[in-house]
Length: 300
Ligand SMILES: [Zn+2]
Image 1 (tube, rainbow, N blue to C red):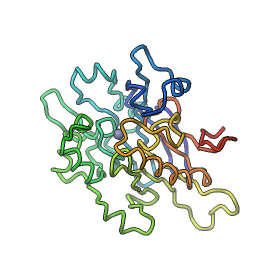
Image 2: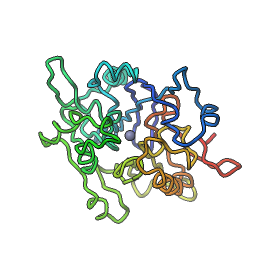
Image 3: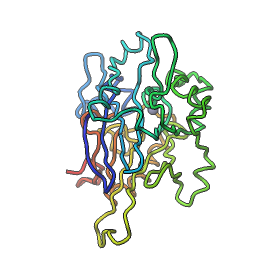
């Protein structure tokens, strides 16, 4: 367990699949190393240490897992490259969370480091759902993009993380039309939990909004903000990526990422959202504020 907090009536626990190593340059796109290395130190091979945060949300009615780490399906060669540890099952157990009690799983997108423990690979080669009683949610466009196996990002998609769940009917695939059909662009998953498109990293990446419902009489008055959390996926992978232009080399559409960050901040900063970071091992959650230069930073 990495962190624990409450958001209104929701209980949030950050669990972790461990850490992994990615090239620092790829993580910071066109940002010069002389700048990003002041914030996070690379190792001798220019790699930086990243986290794999799964947020468990207990709403009182539902137990939700947002993102499921890298999982146990990487080849030995890939494990050697990423140095990942496959720790999510132990992390959940340490936090007292049984896989059977998770009834909703949400994947912001289907890159291998976000949905790896959707399913578990067994020694006999079979694959079964890690969360047997859960309904899984992902975007249909992610599945279709992954199946294309394009030169640019084929390596990022590993279909055993989702194809068996689609075949069994356990995964619900959301369509763009589901989002366009709503007044605020958010598709409700359960009371107080919804997803919204934040394209750029991939064409259909989703953020997850957490808005614990409150009875009208206890609604705070005046300037007290209603609690609002958002797991923002790879739009802001770590707290080191808060600068609007510090987008990743991995992003398929970096210009769109910049626009989506502005749109996100236009609510997240004034409304003091709790922002949950998928790949920050040290700062899994923070509120964001503008510093004296007008740049977004972790609120002090
Ligand atoms: Zn990704």
